[in-house]
Image (cartoon, rainbow, N blue to C red; front, side):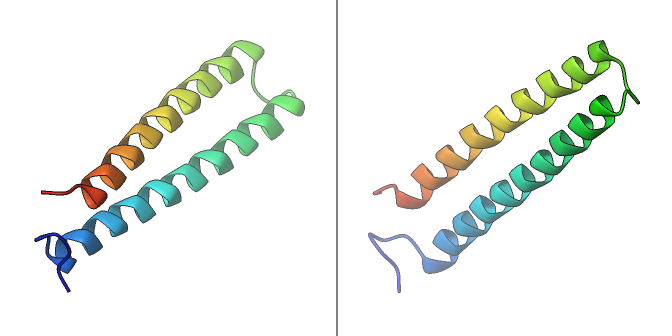
Amino acid sequence: MPRNGVSSDWVAEREDEIARFITARDHLDRLQRLMELLHSRRMITDAYYQDVRDSLDYIAAMLLVGKRNTARLRNAKP
């Protein structure tokens, strides 16, 4: 049933997008744990570890912004 004139399909699409943001964050967490493991075993340099960690942190922050914006769209009143 539409709420506030917004179709339930549109809301469902936004909820699917939010789920994909959450899944993407889970994948980032796995990559970060892998980098920590490789670094602890001295398989990668400190500089490379820091660079990848910074990149993953940046990507995670942007995923959070996207998730928040999508949630706002989902909850927006026309």
